[in-house]
Picture 1 (spheres, one colour):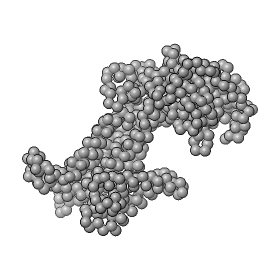
Picture 2 (picture 1 turned 90 degrees about the vertical axis):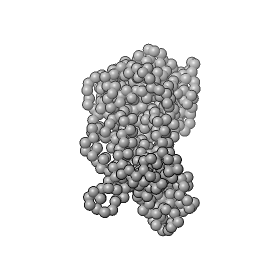
Picture 3 (picture 1 turned 30 degrees about the vertical axis):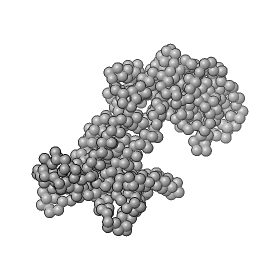
Picture 4 (picture 1 turned 180 degrees about the vertical axis):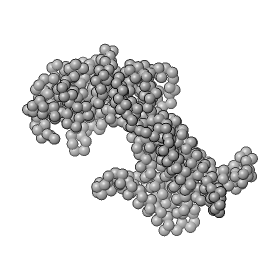
Amino acid sequence: MGEEFVRFSLAPLLIGVLAAMACALPGNFLLLRRQAMIGDAISHVVLPGIVVAFLLTGSVTTWPMMLGALGAAALSAVLIELVRRFGRVEPGAAMGVVFTTLFALGVLMLERANLGRAHLDVQHALYGNLESLMWLRSSGWSSLLDPQALARLPEELPRMAGVAGLMGLLTLVFWRPLKIASFDEGFARSLGIPVRGVSFGIVLAAAAACVAAFDAVGSIIVIAMLVCPPATARLMTDRLSTQVWLSLGFAAFAATAGYVLAGYGPIWLGGEHAVSAAGMIATVAGLTLGIAALCGPHRRRDEAGESQPL
Amino acid sequence: MNLASRQEDFALAARPDGPPASGPAPLEARGLSVSYGVKPALIGVDAAFPSGRMVAVIGPNGAGKSTFLKAALGLAPKIAGEVEIFGEPVDQAYGRFAYVPQRASVDWDFPTQALDVVSMGLYRELGLMGRFRGEHRRRAMAALERVGMADFADRQIGRLSGGQQQRVFLARALAQEADLYLLDEPFAGVDAATERAIVEVLKGLQAEGRTVVCVHHDLATAQEYFDYALLLNLRKIAEGPIREVLTIGNLQRTYGGRLTGPQLAAFGASGGASGGAFGGAGG
């Protein structure tokens, strides 16, 4: 451990944890509003959006990517409506068709674009490059106090920390409108809460978290982290604030356990190569959800109507 | 649907004007019209509810009762008309009115407790970051006590019965300490004891000089609970003190002309959430 851990694993681990938490925060509200599908759609259409933005600008900086992702999200909303209307299918099916098609289109564009000059390729887009985000200038834990070494941390780390912090801050500041508008939209409007702004804000925040996380950890983690940790947390509690805190815990757990298992698990099992951290993190998140669904204390729903006379 | 025959009846229906408002009425609507797509939901409704009354909004299913309430508060998009609450546009009257939506309109699986829901009624005072102090908690508890739900403060709302859920909604409105209360079908799907308890609380509000408006289904209890009524069927049929308004002629115009009693009952109750619209025995 020690020096080697700090050099090779500390930064990827932290970036993975922060990306998972940044996605989980808006994911909580998407889940409660029964909009998990929208989260799924966003995390899928981010890929073609980013590829198009990259093709147009030739850079992998944040703003073009953000705009590309938002443009793709808007386009997908229009397409979903068109498919629903002219294809005469239900909204869920329309969404499923549109976002898988756009995602596939994104993969094709990536492949054909032949982007030799920048580090944007299919594998990167799907799995991210978590393992490659090493802190080569470090020389053990003491580097955490060394400004020169700190300056050479992978740039994804401060960026991801900033986005995760922003998500946390937004959740704290807008906690009450988020809760009230998600629970009872009519009542929220009667209080003067701009409910459209709230729901647009949630989608926008989810898109921002997706874009920020995408570059570092790839599509797979983004897709898993938006929904899995909040859904797991929901099964563990009936209190919203507890749910949100727990979702952060589950996100951090999945990222940590997934990263460690991917790196060391195959070796423990006698294999030679590590497996994809992104894939393992998403798998751990899914398994945690499965366990919570089997044993979580609040998994039984809709028991209303205990009908005690009053 | 008897849409054709109903529209014929509107054409026949006289449209008595509401009473002249003295001072700013708690709720005044002029020419309020709403449509969902191409289907009209409310056509040119004028209404002015006097202060300190218990007002029933009465009409068959699909007559636009809930729509009237929502459009009045700006929750449903109106295509024409104006609404004033205590003489002000709605967006300047926040804090003076409290709205209780239909119980079926929310997800009761939401991870929140009864006391937490009631505390939502304090949002206008607390704002985004205002500290939730002991005094706020006491007020929320007092509101729960007033509807007899103090013992369920910490219970997740999905684990309450329908009547208990409706009481929690009422308590949330009480916590708002408004001057005008608007309730959308507060008696839908609740047991008789809860219905009586809710009526007691509402009459208490009236005794404090506040105005209460309810979308109401059951004509049998209308006279007992309310003292003022607005009869709606897409258009306003009648408005005024309930004893003057609930006449056979008005009811027939509201519920569909020449139909007989049982037919009226069937018409009024079709697809309804809370059963009989006409006659207590069927309610």
